[in-house]
Structure formats: C-alpha cells, structure tokens
Image 1 (cartoon, rainbow, N blue to C red):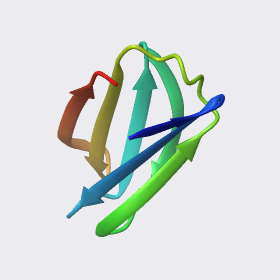
Image 2 (cartoon, one colour):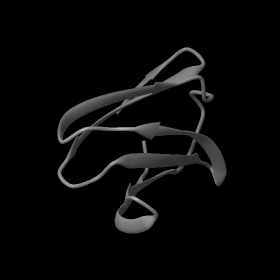
Image 3 (tube, rainbow, N blue to C red):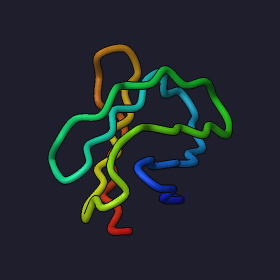
Length: 70
C-alpha cells in the first residue's frame, strides 16, 4: 500500500474475487472490479487514513476481508 499526495494506491492479489470495496477510516471509497491475479487500485482518497478496510466480493457474497493500518 502506498500513499501519494491525496491518493491511496493498494496492490491486491485476488482469486475468485470480482469486486473490491475499500473503506478509509470507515468512509466508503468507490468499489473496483478486479480480475484474478495482481490488481493495483488507485483512489482519490485522502493520504491521511488511519485504518483501511478491504473487502473482497464474488458477486454479492463477501469472501475476503482485511484491515490495514498504514
């Protein structure tokens, strides 16, 4: 995970996940469609987030979750 000025870049490796939802300090960030393998997601979220929650979905089913403290 990298923080650029006023942006957040997250690299995730996925398998059987079609969408990633990201929350920065509890605020939702735009959901992103992903494919199996390495994915880099860049958002315009503030670079000052204290906790980033990453949720992985296959269809509408939650299949993975992780909290990251940058």
